[in-house]
Length: 192
Image 1 (cartoon, rainbow, N blue to C red):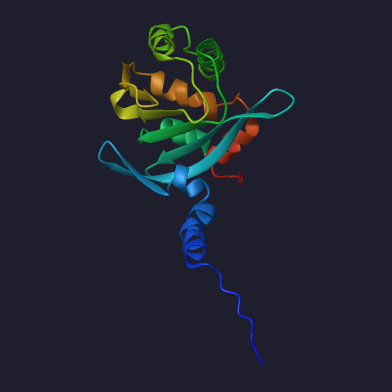
Image 2 (tube, rainbow, N blue to C red; image 1 turned 90 degrees about the horizontal axis):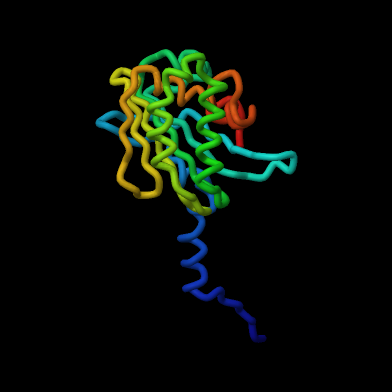
C-alpha cells in the first residue's frame, strides 16, 4: 500500500513564518510602543485616523507619544512634558490644503492665534505637497517653547514661540479637532 505524502515546499513555509510578525504587528511597525526622542523615552499614547468629507476618506494615521500615557487632553496640553506626533499619509495632499488646515486648525484651537501668525507662517512656508507614504513628525517641547517639524526626511524646521506648542497640539486635542475619532484615538480612548 502506497501512502501519498504532500510536502509543503520549505521556501514557502519559511516565507509565511517570516511574514507572520508583519501581519500580526500591523500598526506596531508604523507606531512602536516605545520610541526615543531628544534623549527621552516616550510611550505610545494612542493612534487615530484622520478622515475627511462625508465619504470619510482616509487622509492619515497619527500616533501620539509622551512620557506617560494620559487620556486627558487638558493634562497633555498643560503638563509641559515632551509630546511627539507622527502622521503617516494614506493619500496625496497638496501644499495649499496643508497650509489651509494649519491656519484653520490654529484659529480653532487657540485664542492666541493672532499672536502666533509668525510661527504659523514659518510652518506654512515649510510645507510641500505630500504623497501617499509621506510622514510628518512633530516634537512639542513645551518647556522650551519650541516645535520641531520634519516632513519626510526634509531638514527639520525649528519654531520657537512660547505658546505655539500648546496651540499647535490643540489642533488635534482641543475642542474642535479635525474629526472626533482622531482625537479619541490619540487619547487612547478608542481602537482604530
